[in-house]
Image (cartoon, rainbow, N blue to C red):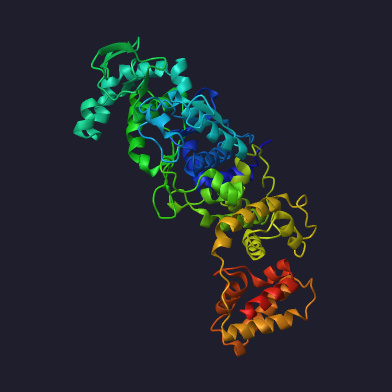
Length: 543
């Protein structure tokens, strides 16, 4: 399959951020990567703590750019540009501190400063702490359907695959020191070495001065923790590079062409780029993105475990909604907490439904277009699934479940959906069925405990009585829009003295649903049922 000329031309002129990134990379390789090699995209993961959404977003955003590049750099016949994506785990890094959200902390405390891949798994499931965290990352990436190659730092160091690159670091040891030492405090500079040997006695990754004895043979000399002078090889997993040097070495050794990283690594990118040049390579293209914040506006940390985990988001929202939230404005900081999930779900489906009515250039700025293309690997436009919609919004579903109570179950929700949805069966609406389960969990954990239905004020009670009287006269299957008209008419009636329609809607939300916000009441009444809504009104008036 090939891309159309129209699609390629639109991609090369698109202002959507993934295409802007792809266009910069295309300028680097106008005639393709030398030797015909695939253009290599990389993402990095530090497995010192459990993977969180910040980890996942880097893979997803990089995939957006990768897919955009395949279009932008398509050949004259429309064939997609050849690409690869490597998810790299820095599991040779020494454990500096014990994360807060880990069981059996004593296991980690006893193994501080050892490479993460050589520390027992405190979860007692895998051969090492790093292997556990790496598996969690791969499990989710696989679940989402990413096309990637997983590479562990420990495999490359231990197997000798990085040995030639390490020799390059040793040969250029002084040039790298000349780059790094001016950036360090005096205390840190006194012991800094680009290469960190691993102690033969303790297995610790050592932060000590290192003398290069023979770069070609990989021999170094250093003073071990017990004061003994050791001369040993730095190859074959007997050393680990400092972070900024490792970053550069990896770019050169793997031939990385694109890597994005967070704003907190801006300085790392500058220094690593200079080191890559010393090693005979070139700094990749890449985006510097803003970091996610928790509900308190603080940076999300793997060790603290604040913010949301991947599992938590997927308990209350869909995979697509997570992707949608991640897509927007990568250069702007965004809070990441459960409160953003419902809106993200509904926005995703709204954007997805709009795709087929948009011209090609507008599709390229649609988050759902990028999400549908992210793992499809195809060239069809619009991508499969474009134009699909949900018969009920997630917000409306949450209102329904909220009224049904914390003890509501899936079958009960589907019985009510029959009032509103044609062929209301889980099998006929699998995407909606997924959201039913999410809504039940969200309601149980966050909505039900906070719902308080207040008694109506005198004018509100009069308006509710009027609404009940009107509902008593309508057929059970009245369309939602007609029910909404009734709601509007009552709110506009000066008899009830509402300053605005907003006050009338708020009164219904607070007295009937127990919430400060809510849905279009016509849609809710149609979904919950006319008679059931009248019962809610009666309960409110009885207060």
